[in-house]
Length: 235
Image 1 (cartoon, helix red, strand yellow):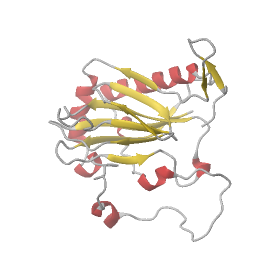
Image 2 (cartoon, one colour):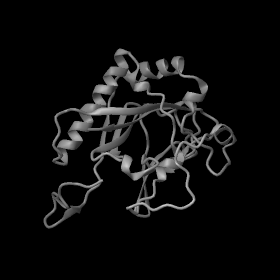
Image 3 (tube, helix red, strand yellow):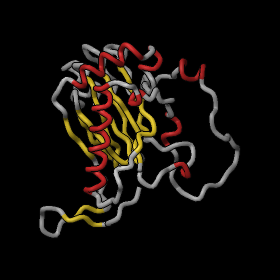
Image 4 (cartoon, one colour):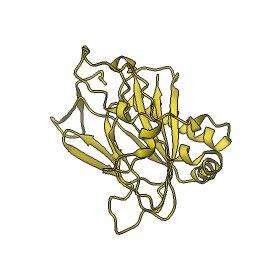
């Protein structure tokens, strides 16, 4: 993703951000997350609740036994770019939970769009509040299965599918009360220039970031389900 300005001023003299990676973060302290958490448990099937989750370092028999190739598989080809579509290997069919007709889900949808517009405004990206959440996944990580999500981004099978202004994000309904003797349990991480930047999820937390940033989820162990609505949003 490209930005309008290569250098952004900071509060410190003569210090600038170079081609900054923007991120929106806000935590909502109310009962909306609890209501949507219970709704998802009721509506989603066990398979839908696990969408996108993996057992790191283990061959996923369930995924491979049902997987159907959904791209033009070739032996030799040329593309006019140098960006590998890392997200393609981890594509998850969305359950589009954010489209559920429910007053509390609609509150979360409005919060996502408001945060998205605030982020665009901070980057001097012009818009007319015409965003669209193109797909979403509500996931429930089981308390004791140790599932996470390997490093990936939300690129697709071909670079031409990328939109000029496209972001991804997550809205946490529950952190699952991770066990205290495992400091990385269920931690969200951004992978940037050889470094991992960890963020500990909280109930009501909303994060939004450019879709091409690589990120992952560490194996989760807790007392209850770790629940998050993941989404892609664009102009």
